[in-house]
Length: 440
Image (cartoon, rainbow, N blue to C red; front, side):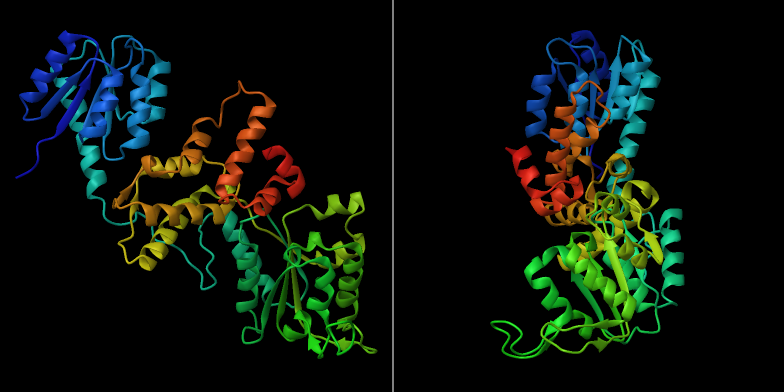
């Protein structure tokens, strides 16, 4: 037998509660009534209902707070708002917070039945959803998307892969610069040859030269054997120099020689070695600005910038968000031996409204967390991390000081990278010391 819908009605008018209860009960619904928001919140902690019908204007705590509470905490419960004080502002605000229908007193019995029917149908449609709405477009290299912005990147990859010219990838942290570099290599004629990725920012300056160029036996204390560097390892294929902006001016001079002469000097060697490879560099900073500041060599910049490719931030390719959500959901559901969940339209809207300071990497982390921590087949706003819900709700608050906005942004960025201060500092465009001071 089909379960009877359970409905909670909240209104400070006893007459209204009785009228709605009697009418809805006549249609076979199980109806609960309460006269204030505080009692309603306590009731919902103990009882699962399909629909909450709430008045907006009530003493102490208004109905808008109940709408917000339900939407953030009960993904399988719909909300219907009724009010005797209609205004366009109330209507817009209640819909923004997640109300599905809006009724104005004095409504007819037919209008009540129609609104309740629509709300319950929406809930049933959501609960019965069992497959993603969109197919994912996935290249062998792992790049996902169909937006016009990412299509431009695909075209650039196709052209660049046919050449061995030096390539400069630009884009914010987490946009997928290494994926693009790999895509260029694995779509090129050198596909069977090495691809070597080097994070220049992750290797101490004192070790970077020996790691890149190698050294001969006896070149320095501890050099007990001759060892080739990353350039020799990538010979014939592709070397990817990530975070190129973090290299010192002296290292930049050595890299310039590699680009100009196509040869490397091992530490302690008397003679240089010829190499033949494609160099792809990447940065999340504006190199021209660094050139103006004197921290990056101008001649190296122009040597690197033969083929520039910019990878857009996630906020500029909103159409790709559902594709990415479904792809990562399937990926982590398969790893967890679960069925891939479905995301509600409301959740997708929130994802599109969010600023994504950590870009695709942040989106992947959140989807992974949702898949692992949520048992529901349908995932809604209620399952989102609090920091993300808070960020979206307050994204357009223009009544805050600059210091307050800065504080919120730093907190949100830290949350997006699971507290990793190095990544957060990169996204914020400040050094770790400055970030530590701001956290204090």
